[in-house]
Image (cartoon, rainbow, N blue to C red; front, side):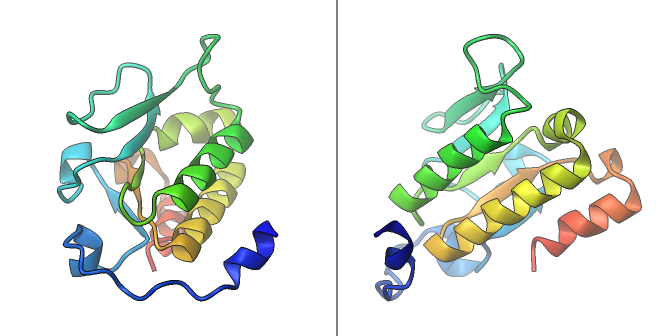
Length: 150
């Protein structure tokens, strides 16, 4: 039943004044969390201790027991997909520790993860923000990350 729901027509655009109605994107790269357009709420996948605005929720990623581990991309992905299916387009996903995830998983696995996340954002009408410094990546890696925005 789950896969068939993907093929059902979705409701038309809402009259809601979220940033997505002004700027159509499903995946956007920003340098800092404060560069994200104003959002009432968001779910942030980030390192333990990452500061987030008031009503935003931090899902900490840490190698410390009890948190999502940095090598658990499959678990992080499951949580993101569940969230996108339940909340689009009201509550975006913010991935605030991409370098950390890439170090633990390798860039190739990390970029595959991001492609899947972006695909789910497109399918559900959701939004994903990737918070990163372009200087943290080599030119080829940054080029591959930028392609996700198109």
